Amino acid sequence: MKKTETYTLPNYYCCYLTYGDFSGLTEDEIKQIDCFVERENLGWLVNVSEESYFKHSNDLNNLGGDVCEYTFEVNE
Image 1 (cartoon, rainbow, N blue to C red):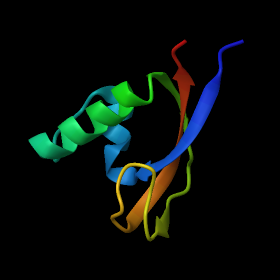
Image 2: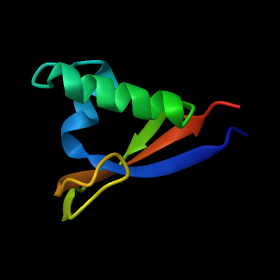
Image 3: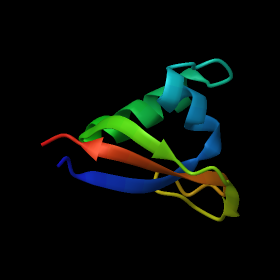
Image 4: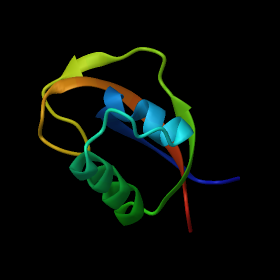
């Protein structure tokens, strides 16, 4: 069974992480999430929570905003 990790990330990354659709994201935002995924050695996105909620920070940056819980397979 593959190991998974769950992260709290901004909900505006959902389309990019799920479908590769980067419309609406800046180059800096794309670079930031790509670096995060690489640094954490993440594989496939396996689940995104259906509910989003406001949080003062998240696992990607210290910016407050609406977030979701993203679960990824971890590459070993």
